[in-house]
Length: 299
Ligand code: SF4
Image 1 (tube, rainbow, N blue to C red):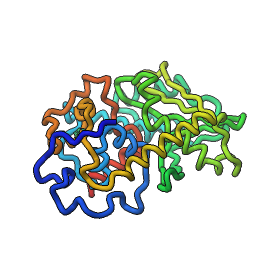
Image 2 (cartoon, rainbow, N blue to C red; image 1 turned 180 degrees about the vertical axis):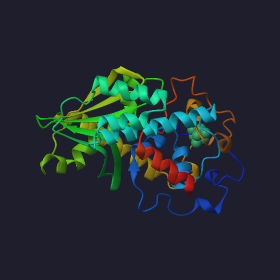
Image 3 (cartoon, helix red, strand yellow; image 1 turned 90 degrees about the horizontal axis):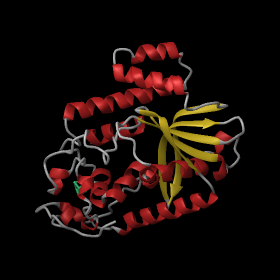
Image 4 (cartoon, helix red, strand yellow; image 1 turned 90 degrees about the vertical axis):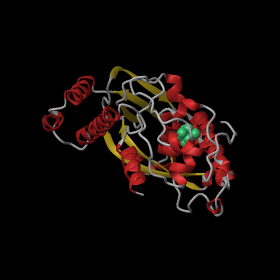
């Protein structure tokens, strides 16, 4: 993570030129999520703008704009279909909901053909959990948690992006850290009130556009401790930034290509193209992310 404060914008309170720089920065009721922690890890300034100042998006995140919106809408619809699937809605009815959108129908057919969830005693779709780290709430909404007949748990996350990130990239994402950690910390009610052992948890990313290449991460007690240290360290770094200028812009301008604050930060007016790729992870990959976006836009 960088510590520079380059590319200052005159009059920007984030640069310390305004009375807005005084006062507490994190609201008392602030909850951390994998999304906000990922923003902080990628760019502390983005965390400030999006999660503390809650500024509306001044620029498109990717070009072509309409194509990007359609992909995001389709991704949300796919998550809705799978939520219906695990809420007991007959597949025939779900298939009818997908009808009319050729790509969505294809994703749904791939899902029903591969059956990526496999045998489960119970499944929980769009499952919200709240835990705690560093004295703050840590929240997430899981696409799916499957409880196996042997009592183990598998977290599923549905990805609809065209590009499938490599295993190392997924391993470095905060989602891979937060979800298993939170399930172990806050999921005992799914286990009859008994603590869930980290060794009984794994997490799988399933890709609608790469259905034969899911990526699974095993979990264990050692990894849980590593994750807890990492999350505590990250939140400590957020709390140590007591003034707006402390939330520096990233030095890695790859993060700016798909960031909606480009013009605000003086990091270019042209959005990255969604066809370019590899670095573009669609932000709206779950209903949770979609709801977060709606809230931010309305604010
Ligand atoms: S445009 Fe770049 S520097 Fe500005 S918030 Fe986004 S990622 Fe950070």
